Image (cartoon, rainbow, N blue to C red; front, side, top):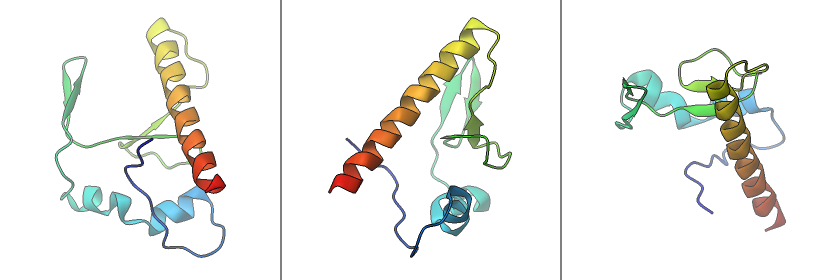
Length: 99
Protein backbone atom coordinates (compact mmCIF):
# COMPACT_ATOMS: atom_id res chain seq x y z
CA UNK A 1 0.00 0.00 0.00
CA UNK A 2 1.53 3.36 -1.12
CA UNK A 3 0.48 6.80 0.03
CA UNK A 4 1.78 9.54 -2.25
CA UNK A 5 0.67 12.58 -0.27
CA UNK A 6 -0.21 13.05 3.36
CA UNK A 7 -0.89 16.27 5.25
CA UNK A 8 -0.85 16.17 9.04
CA UNK A 9 -0.54 19.87 9.85
CA UNK A 10 -3.98 20.51 11.36
CA UNK A 11 -5.36 19.99 14.84
CA UNK A 12 -8.94 18.86 15.40
CA UNK A 13 -11.45 17.62 12.89
CA UNK A 14 -11.96 19.60 9.70
CA UNK A 15 -13.88 18.80 6.57
CA UNK A 16 -12.14 17.94 3.29
CA UNK A 17 -12.43 21.43 1.79
CA UNK A 18 -10.82 23.16 4.78
CA UNK A 19 -7.98 20.64 4.85
CA UNK A 20 -7.46 21.06 1.09
CA UNK A 21 -7.36 24.86 1.41
CA UNK A 22 -4.67 24.61 4.13
CA UNK A 23 -2.64 21.88 2.45
CA UNK A 24 0.34 22.71 0.21
CA UNK A 25 -0.81 19.99 -2.21
CA UNK A 26 -2.25 22.31 -4.85
CA UNK A 27 0.03 25.33 -4.28
CA UNK A 28 2.55 24.25 -6.90
CA UNK A 29 -0.20 23.66 -9.43
CA UNK A 30 -1.66 27.11 -8.78
CA UNK A 31 1.80 28.69 -9.06
CA UNK A 32 2.64 26.81 -12.24
CA UNK A 33 5.64 25.08 -10.64
CA UNK A 34 4.17 21.58 -10.30
CA UNK A 35 6.33 18.76 -11.64
CA UNK A 36 5.47 17.54 -15.09
CA UNK A 37 3.04 14.64 -14.75
CA UNK A 38 2.19 14.35 -18.43
CA UNK A 39 -0.22 11.70 -19.60
CA UNK A 40 -2.41 11.23 -22.65
CA UNK A 41 -6.05 10.18 -22.93
CA UNK A 42 -7.83 9.75 -26.25
CA UNK A 43 -4.99 11.60 -28.03
CA UNK A 44 -5.33 14.61 -25.69
CA UNK A 45 -2.26 15.49 -23.64
CA UNK A 46 -2.54 16.63 -20.03
CA UNK A 47 0.37 18.16 -18.08
CA UNK A 48 -0.76 18.04 -14.46
CA UNK A 49 -2.09 15.31 -12.21
CA UNK A 50 -5.74 15.02 -11.29
CA UNK A 51 -7.63 14.09 -8.15
CA UNK A 52 -10.75 11.96 -7.85
CA UNK A 53 -13.25 13.86 -5.73
CA UNK A 54 -16.92 13.90 -4.84
CA UNK A 55 -19.56 16.57 -5.44
CA UNK A 56 -18.59 18.94 -2.60
CA UNK A 57 -15.32 20.03 -4.20
CA UNK A 58 -15.09 23.21 -6.31
CA UNK A 59 -14.99 23.13 -10.10
CA UNK A 60 -11.27 22.93 -10.90
CA UNK A 61 -9.60 21.25 -13.86
CA UNK A 62 -7.57 19.02 -11.54
CA UNK A 63 -10.69 17.63 -9.80
CA UNK A 64 -12.51 14.80 -11.53
CA UNK A 65 -15.96 14.17 -10.10
CA UNK A 66 -17.98 11.02 -10.45
CA UNK A 67 -20.88 11.07 -12.87
CA UNK A 68 -24.26 10.69 -11.21
CA UNK A 69 -26.07 9.11 -14.18
CA UNK A 70 -23.60 7.79 -16.76
CA UNK A 71 -25.47 7.13 -20.00
CA UNK A 72 -22.71 5.63 -22.14
CA UNK A 73 -20.69 2.45 -21.69
CA UNK A 74 -17.37 4.36 -21.46
CA UNK A 75 -18.75 6.73 -18.82
CA UNK A 76 -20.13 3.84 -16.79
CA UNK A 77 -16.75 2.11 -17.03
CA UNK A 78 -15.03 5.32 -15.84
CA UNK A 79 -17.45 5.69 -12.92
CA UNK A 80 -16.80 2.12 -11.81
CA UNK A 81 -13.02 2.63 -12.03
CA UNK A 82 -13.32 5.83 -10.00
CA UNK A 83 -15.42 4.07 -7.35
CA UNK A 84 -12.78 1.30 -7.10
CA UNK A 85 -10.07 3.91 -6.59
CA UNK A 86 -12.16 5.62 -3.92
CA UNK A 87 -12.58 2.30 -2.09
CA UNK A 88 -8.80 1.84 -2.18
CA UNK A 89 -8.34 5.25 -0.54
CA UNK A 90 -10.92 4.43 2.12
CA UNK A 91 -9.15 1.10 2.78
CA UNK A 92 -5.84 2.94 3.22
CA UNK A 93 -7.38 5.32 5.75
CA UNK A 94 -8.89 2.41 7.69
CA UNK A 95 -5.45 0.77 7.81
CA UNK A 96 -3.88 4.01 9.07
CA UNK A 97 -6.53 4.43 11.75
CA UNK A 98 -5.87 0.90 13.04
CA UNK A 99 -2.19 1.74 13.50
